[in-house]
Picture 1 (cartoon, rainbow, N blue to C red):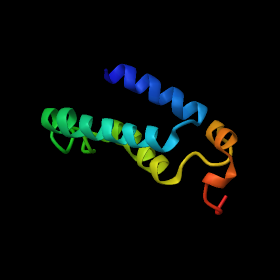
Picture 2: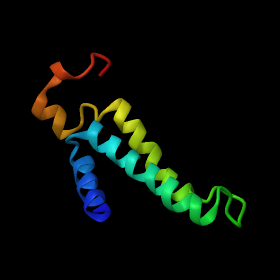
Picture 3: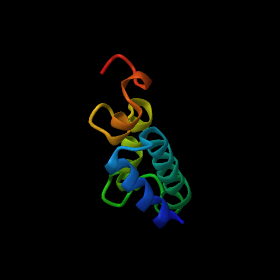
Length: 90
């Protein structure tokens, strides 16, 4: 299910559809990976001195950012739904 989720979320993000929901699910998925897999297995600090969950963090942070910002005007969602649904900051 994780592989299918990552594949579908990646496609949705690449196309720019359901961006906020995809970002939220991406962040939730990698938060679960960090809390359930990385930290119990490796602890907080790796043997090299960095965070043990740093690779998963590189996917968690963009998910959170996309959830709060959305795709913007260069997305398929913007073309389909239109400008009236997005904020006037664009």
